[in-house]
Image (cartoon, rainbow, N blue to C red; front, side, top):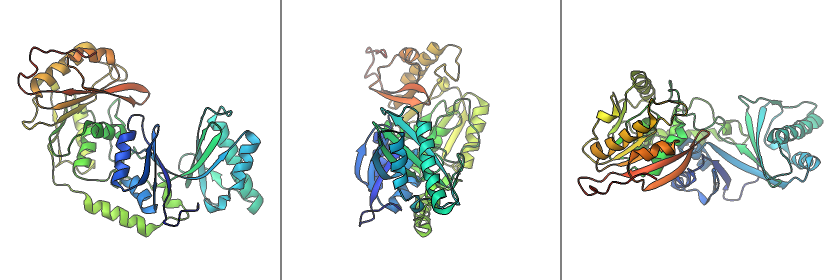
Length: 395
């Protein structure tokens, strides 16, 4: 494998969604990573093999955990091919293994990431063919070894992808609704809310239950990787330490608790969504931790103790509402009247409609729900008449 520093530490790059970088950095700090640096949709750090395994198992806002092993400048096609050929690929890949390359290119003389990936693949297989008379095969769906190529201004970083399948695919979801929330985005929204994992957590438009399950996993200290069915990418690496990974896995199992530590409550007006949420919750083993009820949010009241509301109402993008402006007005009225003492976080991709909430947002955090540009709006819902006569409008 790539040369490592004497203490066993090496560089690690962890990718995430735009807007969640600081949350991810906090998760990496909790794993005692060193030299943590926040970038765009990624955080770099330094750690050892155990910490790389832990990052895959524990990081709730990580999409992929990459291990960079080579940097070089590629001026043109011939240069890229020659630089890739300089690497001894037998250190990373056996001729009988399958592999795939994902490439991202920006601000470079190369315009197409697919072309760069193809050229890199050619250089690798040509090296094997020349040395052994055989070549490893490409498998884009379930490769043994995933390589990541990042080219910015003609500087190439090649990394091993330790995650394999994207880490947002936790493995607990049996059913989703029309517009399911990405698990990483859900975990990031909860992280941004500052929820203490002890006070009540309410999702009043819970759909298939993703926010509820992610919140419960946090409260119960359950590593999201424990639900995963597919092997991790690092399990096919030449330096894979099965005993070390078993220790990391068993430690995570011991830390998990299934005795409820917080009130986690979800509502949805659609009985099909309630059923889907309950099925997913049961599949995650969290039916004793999360309570879901079929209810109209506008007729609900908050649990007595102050907590947080986190919700992802329709934007009129993938789920259509009969009257989106009235929907958001009713959300604002219900929060103001029935959820006093709570902090509410509303993710929306419809900022025009959100003006009808009628409350002043104390924070507006840019996020993306898939391709949809959104804002996570924070509303502080004061108790009693402290704000009476001071009606604010979202702008």
